[in-house]
Image (cartoon, rainbow, N blue to C red):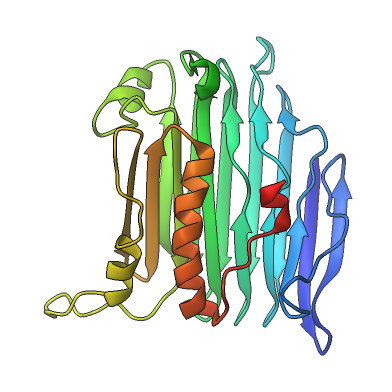
Length: 282
């Protein structure tokens, strides 16, 4: 399945100006809980799962001055792969033009044991546009302690600003490196759920020799997201982006931490209070 949507700004606010889809991947209509200038869209994939041979391709083009929050009504499930043609793919392209805003908040991806999943997300933007996004992945099924002991998982997330790559997060788990990546201190430390969030670009980074720290970063770190035996949580600043990370046992807990940071950063970036979509609470 594939979908290509375009969001445009006019005197009536942000509108879904184009939506082309093939297969069971579509958007019913935009919602405007924050007013006409900021659209909320639910990306629907009724099968909910990805099986062997599937490729889901999503393209979002946010034109100048348009603003949107895109989420999903439920988790994406990647099922066990077949022996023949095992690869399952998800490809996402996000283009954010001048003075446009995109908040990309899909719910978690649940990767079953013995899946062979490849996922890529590419964000193209410029220094005057704004992006907030997160990715939460469960490798296995924590509720029944079914771990990801077989199969493969490859994920790449790239943010490009004015043609220059500013952020890359990638991981490739296969039979050769599984133990090292899933269990080591430099890997997932035996946690089954991982996630990261990215917000930016933000104000120019303080000079490295400055004695003054980043007050916004201090405020973000002051949020009640302390690491414990159930999870490891942190946030830092990389160039002109804030990047938060989570390792733990609950996708809901990961999103809760990310939402806390988003609620602070959104006020600075957009001058708006965070407005969580109603679908997150159903």
